[in-house]
Image (tube, rainbow, N blue to C red; front, side, top):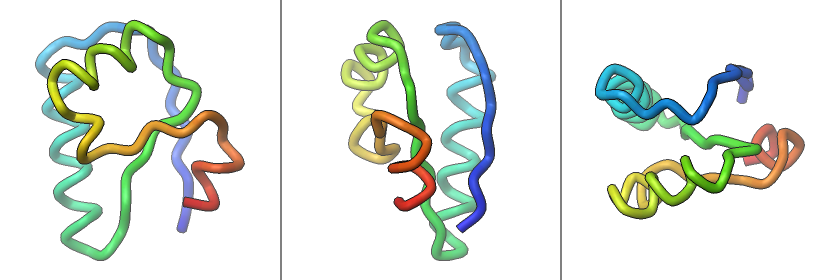
Length: 68
């Protein structure tokens, strides 16, 4: 499965969240998966509080993400 790298800060505005959810829906509909890697503690906590971590896996590094 191809990996897409994207660098961003810990900004979590509604556009960013909407884009992640839309990407998740499109990928899973086509049999794919979405995961993130090297996520900072603030963003990880945001995902936990909003339960996005139940849908989008957070992995420690790129190698594990590509193997996902």
